[in-house]
Image 1 (cartoon, helix red, strand yellow):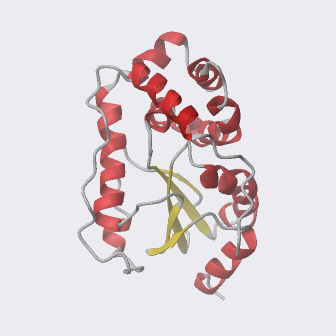
Image 2: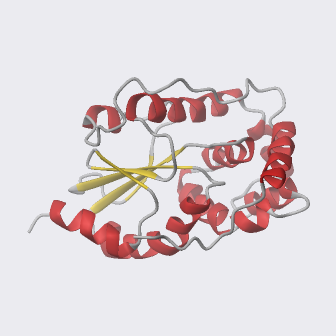
Length: 228
């Protein structure tokens, strides 16, 4: 079914400018995030659960019960329009209907496509665990404002302050090589082991599903997997 993105795409020139600004913020790190080609056929949809559930060095951040019958692993980029669409328009209903009721566990994994998304991924990982999901929700809801701002890093800092960051901790996070390496490892695993090459990509009990989905479409994917 066609999607209706709520956030417009930015012109290529504007995105290039944002990438340049974020590169300044990330100066000194071993950039960029470089990936090799996946080592298996892209047509393979059901992936081994041992690979899907392998967490990166920073660990996984999840919503829902650990023993939920269905686990959704989501790979997303904070500058992805369709990822924002899913998080703003679908996730609240998904959380109310499936996650809060113990039926589904959601694991979010960072898959940044550019330096600005890398910066946002690193900030999310630097935040305390209990503020991780509120911060990524804030980043997606403010995506358009941040990416169309004349001073996007200032707007990013303003958002991060709501999660407890100071100017000093904000800058320290963006210079933290271990956090960068952890984000890079998550992306590399997703690309090379699981064939992720677009966002959002979901793995629902190991089955790969690409593209943002409405709550009605998620119903169709989830209901057959739930105990009757």
